[in-house]
Image (cartoon, rainbow, N blue to C red):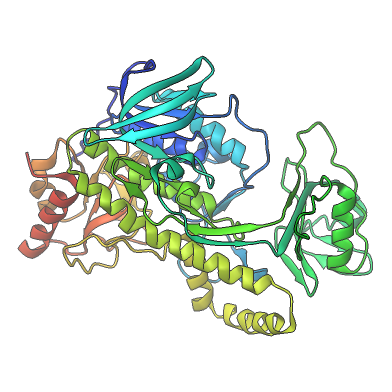
Length: 541
């Protein structure tokens, strides 16, 4: 076995106002924290500005859906989030536009889900960022910025008063109402809908109404409302989510609009009861949630679908909701945003460290914008499928027939996972894995009885480029020797679903930049490997 693995540890100590720092990140939510971790792993010093003095207890996303779960596994974060030491497993079923998406019989099912609340995701990412030496400034808010050819001057309001911070690059991960985007003059075109009202609350439901086997609600006079699924009627939508170890969540959605100029009263459980009655046509007995708060009680009266007209303005970049907002149906938000940051992190670090030209940053938008466009498309399609009306009911009947075909079910699952997006790696490499997230290989490193098996996820936690050479003569590893200071190499044998792969060049974000299935790659394939190494990681030493 040949193995070179390195970890950067040259993280500078805490900075003070006025100090030049490598990168300033506006926003300390999941996306900002994940980006900070990625930069720190690559030896770059980020400072995170978060306007909130303490982590919010507000209930937001209820879990993670999609390919990001495999990405988190490859940073060692999946086990931290779930407590499960086993690799992520795809789910046997999900929901698309309030229609069941059955995946148990789907070959190579791409859809993963974990039910972890967003505040736990933030907690784990903040813990990891702190371990890596990231400075997180809570109670500090970006209020202004100006940039020139050499960097960005950030104006910040902090607990001790206003100050400025000079940085090479500034990344806005500050949400849909991004101050960074506004200050940069980046447009945010799209649509705002005001014809839907969503009501959500933590509730308690009598045990007599709950199926102990499935967790479904058996509503008197109506019937079954399945758990963890949007359930559509001709009058609206209802969803019941009995999360393990957490308070149940009940949600309704109705198509209506608030009269212009009227201010609705504060949201209440009685308002939710009335909404349930309209959606189901009967009453659902439920009471206030048990235990101490904070308890979720929320009304949303509009929805935005918007995409920034550019993800970068000089030395200012956008990630996550700052770059795109959309319906939350199907839970794609964290999948999209966190993968933005993993794509951006290593590229920005390479530019900051002088190991890549600024042009590398252009590939951030060219790769991630199509992913955002796909999310906008499928969330709008799902929103159309849950709307009221007889014509929608007919459309749903047709969709239900189509989703019973395993090929169609897999297509939709890949769309929701984000695995349907293939990055253009250049060079005309037609290998089916190029541009895709690397498969979950199990590697035989020749360690003998009891110790020779290694998962790919165990090799990618340093966020370094990795060349896996599984060929007979290790010619790819020899070809990459000029990049040994930047690219880790491993020679081994593979097993599992992708055992036919003989060599992979994997970028730090986990995507395949070059691949071969030849036991002994020819000169043409090795020439393509050299081109990929040069394009993504610079000239050979």
